[in-house]
Image (cartoon, rainbow, N blue to C red; front, side):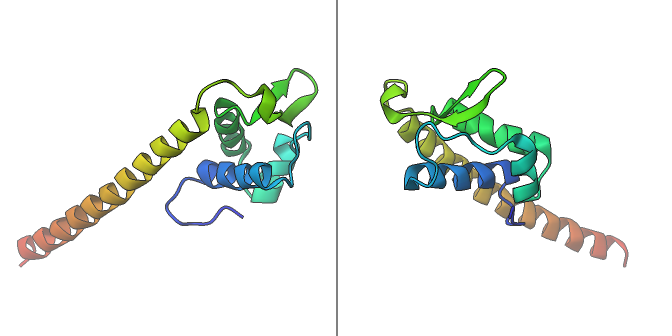
Length: 121
């Protein structure tokens, strides 16, 4: 399910799981599938899945219980403050920077190709 969009796979997985949590298909108290199950579901490596779950943990959407798994956190138990809003703002800024960086890299590649063609003449 991870698509080759240029957006890192762990962010795509975190987005999908976040949408499931916010949409109610993963209700508070519900365990997330195991890391291995998520890796298979998203056709991703274990480390990519762990990074995605780590993002959700940092956002306060899930909580890990040693030896039991990772569970959707009840919003009443979520940490105070607008952590989710702050994270959303940061993610938007990172996305904007990613787009801008891609444009710069494309321009650099184009100018390098032109320079190589000129030098080979």
